[in-house]
Length: 119
Image (cartoon, rainbow, N blue to C red):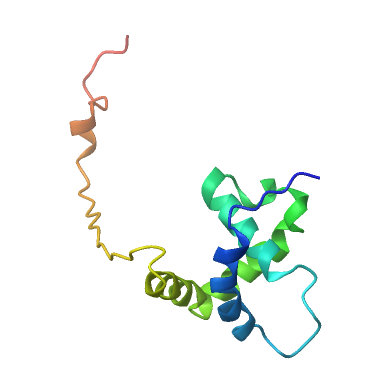
């Protein structure tokens, strides 16, 4: 079976303690490993595909998505970025983008006017 891993074992070793620390101790054990969930999320980001198109290799897409969602809610992604920056693996920069939207009147977009003849 083809491996879809994009992280090396050394890279994952930097991140793994954060993922284990954030794991919920209540309930049943997860059906997919943190490594598979993380690699599944990275696959989605790299390929730009929808969650349902995630290969079965990573586990059911819904399990990967729910893990991703929980990690966002618990701030795991920020902790991972800070750990990688501390290890000098990457440099985190924050940028703010303003996407102000100005609506134009419908006539400015070339819409038909009431008196126009039909072609």
